[in-house]
Image (cartoon, rainbow, N blue to C red; front, side):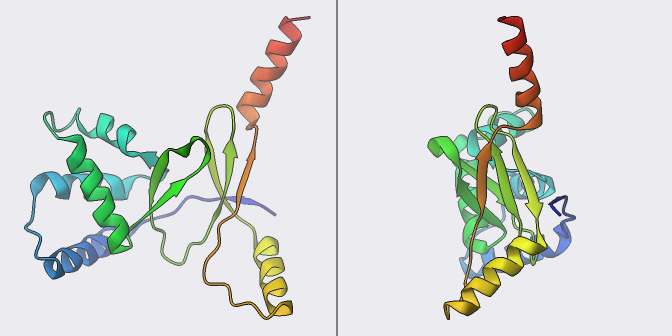
Length: 162
């Protein structure tokens, strides 16, 4: 059974973790960076730097693209975000959901990303790892195809062309 994932993020703990990380690097606090982090951690989706920049610049006019970039890089280094390159080479970032492993369906037409978790898939890969005496440290499963919306849109376009 495949379950669509929605995660609840404990932003308070994440912000404490980032503050501790920033102190180790002797980074001074910045209102812009704090806003970016707070905003990003509330997202429950994968987002590119450009998309995040376009959303945040409406709230903080004059914010620089490089500020968004540097902040996301810090979140990745800190362990609060992951950077993934799906199709088309665009890096997308998502908040880390601690102990909430998930995999992805990616629509090759519209780019929609659907997160899911499946116990059977996890069990199969663990059984295979055991069989081959392999220690899994990390993995990702990305399945590319056509989402339901695009399938329906495609059928309508196909029927219209007859």
